[in-house]
Image (cartoon, rainbow, N blue to C red; front, side, top):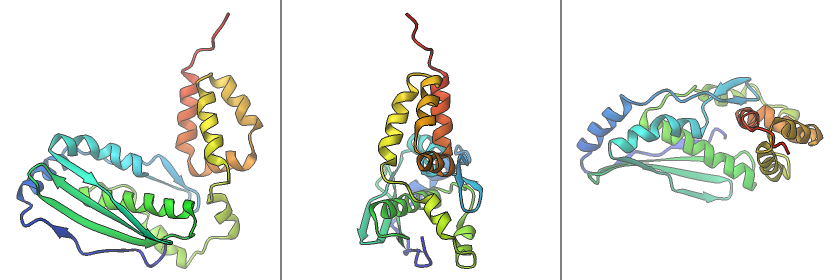
Length: 213
């Protein structure tokens, strides 16, 4: 994202008394979001969107709270609106608008995920590692072209990862055999940007017993 990222004014129902009471109870039951992913530029761990959801979904649902995140886009300009709604009909709404670093489906998709993660965490009070400072420092520490290439998802990566996930059902030996024959840029992108997924695949494969005649 860039320096054009901004939050809009928070909107709300005429009363949020019941919502606030329910949110207070839910927050008392929320745990910190697990920092399972690695920022390849700053070599630091952070909590991704799934981790933030895992930390708050149960407590929110238990206390009658729901989150909606409609999205709109105008080219590379993306707006993610986060709505916190209560069973009473009360609600809070806030929008995060940002410009994707690249006007491509992958770039816009990354911006949407970024907006959903920060919108959700901000709305419900989850406190994952704060990498806003990291993002702000990019103006003083611009990424190199090589670093940009490392972070960009290679063409065909999604299909390859889907195949790799299917192979994991066949056990560790099959997974490692497929891994060793895979393209180096696919492997580098997975371990460098989505290492938690790779570790999960290895764990899944290790749990499978080979079929013997």
